[in-house]
Image 1 (tube, protein in one colour):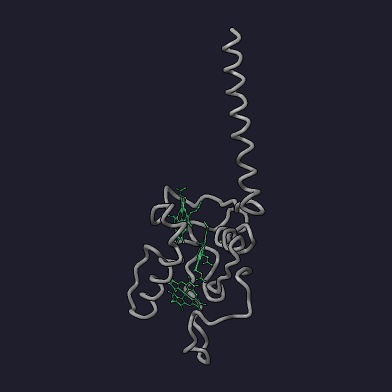
Image 2: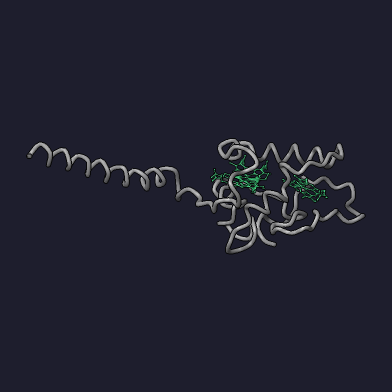
Amino acid sequence: MAKLADWLRLVVLAGVAAVLAVPSFQAAAGVGLPKLERGKGEKCVEDTQFMRRNHMELLKHQRDDTMRKGIRTTKHSLKGCVECHAGSQSGSVAAGKDDFCMACHVYTGTRLDCWDCHATKPGRKPARVADPGQAAASPQMPSPKNGGGQ
Ligand code: HEC
Ligand code: HEC
Ligand code: HEC
């Protein structure tokens, strides 16, 4: 009987330790890891783990293909990301620091200029083409606006 009671106490202690380990891990990592809203649908366009690490490469290649070679596929389109990842509150991927495309980037200190031209909310709107005076401007052109807004 005493043995069973000891064993049960161990189990409870282990459970408490596991619960405490989570916040202390976050504290060690900084202010707390970003909390992301789950995307729409069953799954992402690629494996989730792959997306966490490589989405920037996908988007760049996709853009290079579209802009330079005139190839247009939709699998990794930015429009797709926005359609599935716009926040249920804001309706946007980048209106506030909790929105999907902002949360991690705020955390890592990354600033995107994409939203100067691309819509942050779902819709049919194509990216804004630079006005004639800036026709030759590169999409990577630095901009005074920050990554949020719109
Ligand atoms: C100066 C304006 C401008 C900026 C800034 C810009 N783009 Fe674009 N982008 C365009 C235009 C114009 C197109 C072609 C029209 C279209 O496909 O909607 C395009 C097309 C794309 C496409 C292919 C179409 C799609 O919806 O997937 C991707 C992907 C893309 N851009 C990603 C990005 C990313 C990521 C950033 C930020 C790092 C960015 N763009 C910044 C203007 C811009
Ligand atoms: C058809 C809807 C859909 C599209 C389109 C989509 N996603 Fe996702 N995405 C999801 C879902 C659902 C998840 C969560 C999957 C899971 O939990 O395993 C996810 C997960 C992610 C994650 C990991 C989030 C986390 O919790 O760590 C990233 C990063 C991501 N997507 C980026 C993108 C980018 C960038 C694009 C555009 C190239 C995109 N997604 C397009 C539905 C989508
Ligand atoms: C799970 C966290 C996470 C989410 C969610 C996320 N990103 Fe990222 N993103 C990163 C990290 C980490 C980097 C690399 C940071 C760096 O190198 O400065 C990055 C970098 C990028 C870059 C390259 C920036 C540069 O200057 O080279 C682009 C473009 C980008 N993300 C687009 C997006 C878009 C669009 C979304 C929303 C659909 C999104 N990301 C959502 C974590 C995330």
